[in-house]
Length: 227
Ligand code: CA
Image 1 (tube, rainbow, N blue to C red):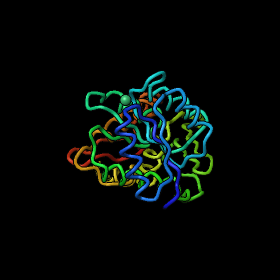
Image 2 (tube, helix red, strand yellow; image 1 turned 90 degrees about the vertical axis):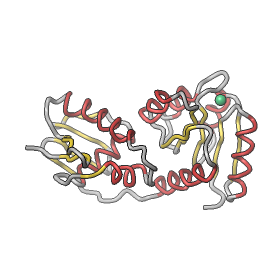
Image 3 (cartoon, rainbow, N blue to C red; image 1 turned 90 degrees about the horizontal axis):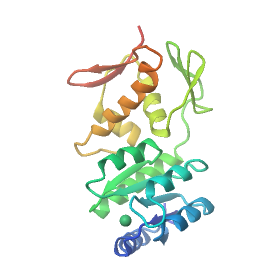
Image 4 (cartoon, helix red, strand yellow; image 1 turned 45 degrees about the horizontal axis):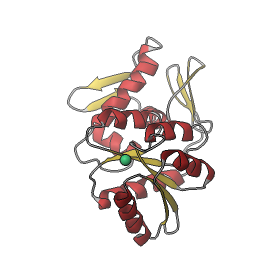
């Protein structure tokens, strides 16, 4: 929707300027910042609808900015990473980035991901009743997850993924379905991020509580069941 406010934190002035112009052309209200530390201050103080955040920045890197920002803000963040920063990419998602783009990227793709992140932000929480499978319970109102009444600490994306799995318990779902429903768009081919998140959830649930909720369905994807 036109007028939504976007902050770009990117020290490569050419890229920042290019993205700014494209976003302005789409009707967004855009600001840019080239320094990491000042970027964090602006991100924290300003009321932005979305933040585009580069990883490698002077004075404070993007990962640290994201980590600190997430202590007080749920503003959608799309990270920009270089090709050789795969680990950063995964780490960024783990500490609460909504999405990432690998540089160089097509501006159309960035625009699509921005629209998608903004749409998710606005989507009202659906369903108010508690979701459960076995000893696992999700309270969508409180955004909380418990196992045997013990609080389970999940990142935003882990929570979204788990919620989707519980809503579809006892049904085999494909990685593509997960990407579409949890990440909100068709990822062309790269479904690795789903496996990465399934690993996070397994370690926080199956391994930690010595149970088996998340099952791999060979050639299909995953199924959540409790026996
Ligand atoms: Ca940079």
